[in-house]
Amino acid sequence: MNNLIQESMSRSIGDVRTQIAGIDEKLADLFGRIAEIMAKDRYKGERPSYPISGKVVEDILRDIGGGRRINTIPFGEPTRECLEECLVIAYGKIKSKNGFIKITKKVNDYWLNCGVVNSRTLIFTDCWDIAEFNSWFRESCNKYTSSGNRNNVKHTVGIALYGDYGFSLQYLR
Image (cartoon, rainbow, N blue to C red):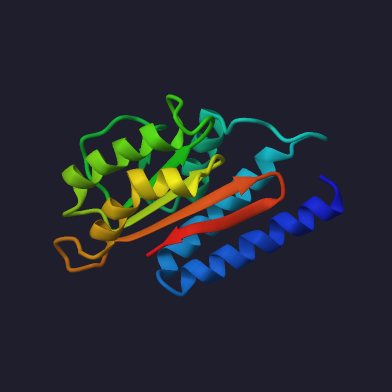
């Protein structure tokens, strides 16, 4: 990875991590760990790799380790067990099978089933459209983040856009 891209990627990870830490330090830690792994995978060679693969998600889940268990959408082993953290990766065209619109519908279903346990949801996407977000998902995000789980831990949702030169925060509450 050339120096400009590496500096941009590193700076963006630090900037987004700092923004998230202002709301939820544990979510910021999760973001930082995952973003570093994604950045390494994205530039294995001269060119970026698209899209993020299931193997990368497996690496992420193994590397965050420390006994930390996390729900994943759409990757990972399907489980009915609800956990405090959920990692979501939406990629490709916004309305494709794993695109933002269809994946966020799965996130809404997850929240309906697991909102009593879940407290943090982190969504990475490589395709962002603010109009689509506003019409499909903003209201449910705002409603979800206005409540807490059964332990009175406030729900936090972060959405990070990732691309060739780094990460940017699109939603945090």
